[in-house]
Image 1: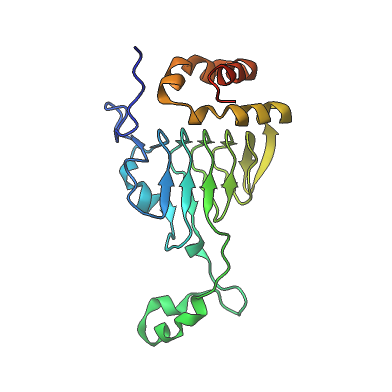
Image 2: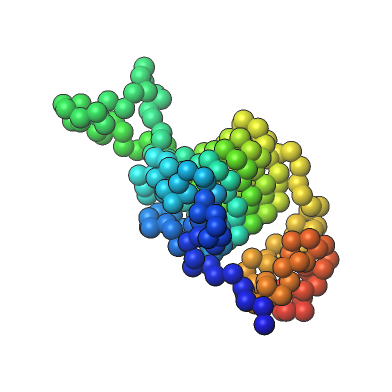
Amino acid sequence: MPVPADPTVLHPMPEQPRVVLLKPLVKSPLIEVGEYSYYDDPDDATAFETRNVLYHYGPERLVIGRFCALGTGTRFLMNGANHRMDGPSTFPFPTMGGSWADHFDLLTGLPGRGDTVVGHDVWFGHGTTVMPGVRIGHGAIIGAGSVVTRDVPDYGVVGGNPARLLRTRYSEEDVTRLLTAAWWDWPAALITEHVRTIMSGTVDALAEIARRAGRA
């Protein structure tokens, strides 16, 4: 019987230590990552929490779904990056210490956009930056070097700085069918049995598998 890949192994490709599965890696209670989502970095992929999730002082969360592929340099900027913009200076004086720290109230209540949420099966190209509070839909593709400042629809393809929607991968009807099939939620055995259809099949074929399996 075919055996699915192990989602608990930190390095799924032992000969390539640059690739790590994020679920067994992350420790922060403010970061949630689904099974099989991975990050690829030749320098130190295991430093993802500190090098790729920036200004994460809470309470906002970073949520990444299952089966996401994060290229080298994918970074998430969190709400802690915000500065005041309603006065003459944006400089965060209280954080520098000394008597300036007496004015820390000036840094409270800064505007925030809430959690940053990434759906399932999202592919991030090299050097992508995601701004705070963005929501990225299932099956989306984020082009290399993109700066994502606004929400991305399911199965949307975006690119640029700021990123704009270039196209959608499927028709609205087929996107609905794909979301209904939700292959990323299938049991591992069912995914293993139908890997070829998931990777290179048609929406019709995937929807039929989901129907037969009682998943649609």
